[in-house]
Structures are given as C-alpha cells and as structure tokens.
Length: 247
Image 1 (cartoon, rainbow, N blue to C red):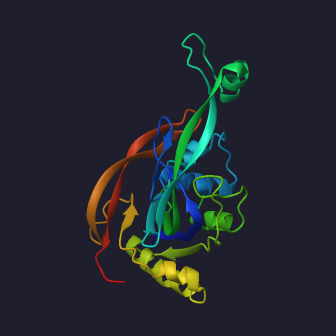
Image 2 (cartoon, rainbow, N blue to C red):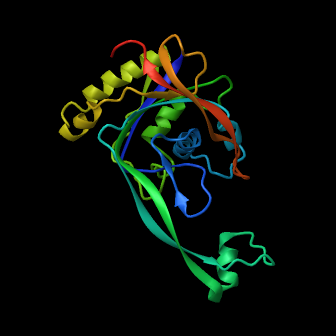
Image 3 (cartoon, rainbow, N blue to C red):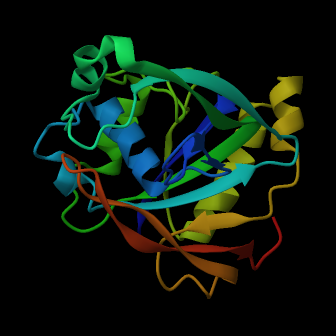
C-alpha cells in the first residue's frame, strides 16, 4: 500500500507567493509546490545552499485541501529603498545596491497580499528514490530543525502540525484526514468552527486520480524548483476537483 504523510497547517495570516515583478506581491489561496517542499526541507534541516536540496525537490507528491469558507483576503503596504535607475551601474547584491549610492536612494511603496483564517490539510506522498521517507519527515515536523512559518516570516504557525502516516489511496487519505482532525479539534470551538466549514475542493499533482476524483480543472503552475541557487522553476500540472464519494 502507498504511504502518505498527513499534517495540518493553520496560521492567522498566510501568504503563498505567486511569480511577481514590481511593487505587488500576490498570494494564492493554496501553497505552491515549492513552498511546501521548502517547508519540509526547513523541518529536516536542509539549508537553501545545500547541494542535496535540488534532489529533494524532485521527489514527493503534494496534495492540499484548503478550508477557505471562513477566510478573508486583505493587503498591506511596505516601503522599500532602491537607487535611482542608472543603466551604467551593475549591482550584484541587494546590499551592494543600497550602500553604493546612499544619497540616491528613493522610497518605493509595495503591496503584499494575505489570507487570514485558512486551515489546510496536506498530504505528502513519497516517490521512488526519495531521499527521506515519510516517517523521517513526520519526525522532522514534530521536532523541526529550523523555524517554520507560513509563506512569510511574519506568519508563524498557530497550531501543532500533528502529522500522521496513512496507508492507502490518496482519496482515502483525505477522508481519513477529515475524520482524524475533526476528532482532534472536537473540544476546541474555534478550530471546530473552521474544520466544520465547507471544503469541497482538492488540489493534487498525482497523475491518474480520475477514478477517485472528479477533475474540474487542470492548470500549469510554475512552482517546480529545478535549481535552488539560480532560483529556476519549471511548470507542472496541478489538478483541482472533488472527491467522487461523499464524506
């Protein structure tokens, strides 16, 4: 049977970045594949400059069930400093950019998007040749090496991740997660309020799941990292749909 690692994510604020250039930093309602892999790598203690991170990023399927019924979207504003445009000068780092011409710095107003009160159930599936087993990742989520946050450093976790291992189909893993975390939050009225909300959409990147899911949409997301040092990503297919059986 296929083993899955299931865990929950909740934070008052979440911001899952989209590709962006300029003053606006958009947020998707669900985490990108690269965000989830980065989250797991941080728990395992894999640094961004470790050579093994590119191998790590090529493995594991990611599936997400977001509880967005009670959520709200909002944005806030930041100011950043940058020098005036000068095509004759080349800056290799942000530090170099700021310190070289301190008197020529200008203030730029930027906008960040957030969602609040979104609760997630996430399923990780190990692939062939994966450098870490789901059992090892489960232990890392219980005792993470690095501090974990939800998209941005100003978004700390507000709940234990409560990871569990499940063996079976992906659809069955979601059904199990629903029952497990309903029981987990039974005595907490605030979390029970979120977990009891409608969450009928599922997102996954596993192929050949049409037997157990009604596929509503297939879209390309440029969030599969291939080279961490160069910040290079390629497209991958993300499926969106509903479970075919009632929960």
